Length: 77
Image (cartoon, rainbow, N blue to C red):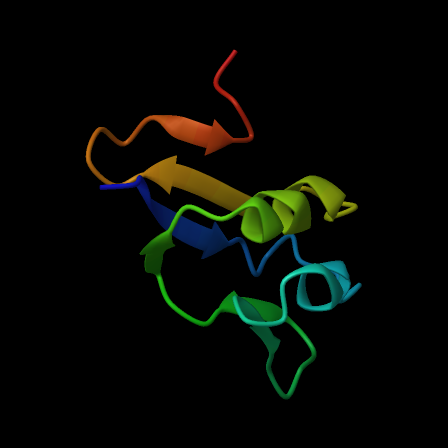
């Protein structure tokens, strides 16, 4: 079985650039204020979701492994 991720968007940081929706439209949506939110809080690991988090200009997207709570992005230093 593959990894499961908990995906969160810090709406206090999100600037509504929309890069996440452009990169992973199946995983992110913009609301009426044009801020991002994940379609599902918990999802299967996905290269598209990771690419969306990495492309966010303000790093508003965080991804953690659901089983261990280990950071996937941004990585813990």
